[in-house]
Length: 264
Image (cartoon, rainbow, N blue to C red; front, side, top):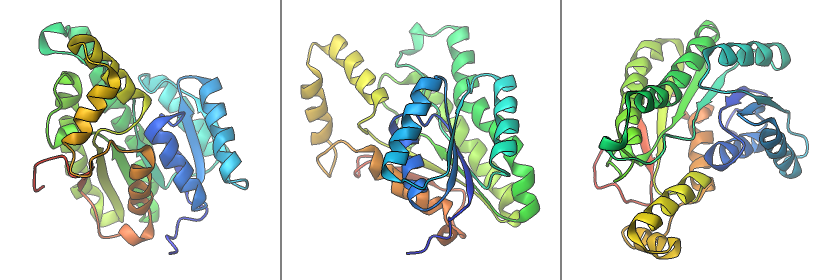
């Protein structure tokens, strides 16, 4: 199937590992020109080489950027425009706030999580949107969490702030739809990434169970009887970025093996 993505320019945030890296690899396979980024230059350069090991002729540029910083986001965007050209696809992604309960959280924790989870997406979208509207085509895809469908115990910051991102994305989708720009959110459930490993470790310490037992218990409550893999999400992101998804916008699509018990 020709998805019409060859030579499109994309930014994929937080793509040194996990969901971001899987999305970048899948887009590279479709011929998308990529700007990938991470807080650590060594990590993002390693991800670049790993993607090139699979897609030998991929055009991929790697950048070190702290997405919590408005100044660094602007500098990053300006470098990408110079090196790659105007951006047609934006994949907003961050590692997500740390596990916590409500009473553990200070004002500083809330402010830092808001800046990372929500403002990074808003700032990057603000930068890429004018050109998308000018050419009457663009894709903005947010990697969120199934917690927007069904809150996850122990992820208080994520449960709260990702709902804010979802509301923002839905409102934005209405505003930019007449300009050929779609805005969608993908919502992974328990997926085997470094972040989920950290959550399992936290749950192991508090429960006394080992991580394997906890993962087995989680999988037993998922209709597909397994924890997801990053690649399960990547294909959906690539489809939503494609010409084939022209009439799909304002969506929040869960990729969770059927675990969320909701209809929407």
